[in-house]
Image (cartoon, rainbow, N blue to C red; front, side, top):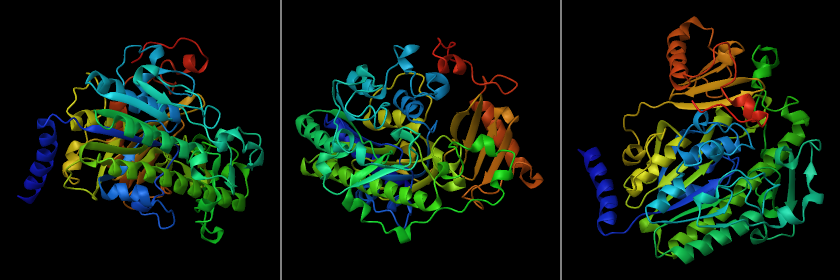
Length: 488
């Protein structure tokens, strides 16, 4: 009975807004390369009071996953509501409109419904930090207005950056700087918050879909020095690496960053970088707090859906890896929080398995907007209404390791990954007993039933794979800049 009343109450709040002809606004907050090391996700060290505040006002998704742990493939999937196998985006150069010119993106759906759609900062792919201040690989058709801020972290501080991997570009380097002189508002993400607040003020009286994309905690980790001061080096530890990791047959396939471990830096240097990453989280959290304060000041909380998401996770030394592009939990898992006006379940978390591709149909459902046909995710509205609701959907993540793909499936208990259709190996992890994914059970007879179930999910989600472990059709053509094959 209580569960029924709760659901009716939630639906009544949303329905009442529509009945009064007040369309629900959408504030769409993105961060770049942020993992789940946040206070609201149980991290005891990281200070993220504003994201934690939003979690108390909405639903926190404990098991949310990206479709590809790399910026452009992930963001293209989320913004079109289509999986990478359909968008054909597997790298940082190819644009989904090359072969899908008429696809309706998430903000376009809202524009068609009479909404203003604007963007500040990074929503589609932008080289970070190289493309800061430009539109990067944006989709102009998605917006009526856009702003590309650039702050002192981009314009004047590069000579002072500590870079432990100088042969790599800053966008993939172990590099940081504690800026002792610059103020929050002078850094790029401070400017993103300022411009986002300006657009909120300008469009508060009509329905809006406003996307605010922050650039941190993507490397280089440059923030005002006070955010570094939040973390003592004595408190920074590195994850243990399984002693037999290098000896396993799967090791070459799994190493998303080379050299291994820690991209060749020393453990102490890796600890410094981990501290810098945490400082970047706290810095961008403060900017998100400024935006949330503006929402409250402008009286928008009662008619605005707020979504917070990261494009993929991030390794900070787990398995000796750094950054992303693995199929491990740390790269595939992302923070997602959704806050809805009138929500009776605010502050609760759901343990159900969801995906970033689910955000498109979810927002259409919550806002009462008609979505285009063919979306490949599922509305998570039932989980906002009841975090313990029945849910039967797994999460699917893929990467490309050289010439062969890795396909990974996550359920509430299990993660299964196969490389090169299994020719390069298989992995099966029991998250009930092994949340750090240290014990591969793929060859354990006791896990045979789970293995078969997860293998069936791979075959269901990637039915068009080429036999013999070859890459997906069109991958090599796009990688070489040639016209890809027709989407599956």
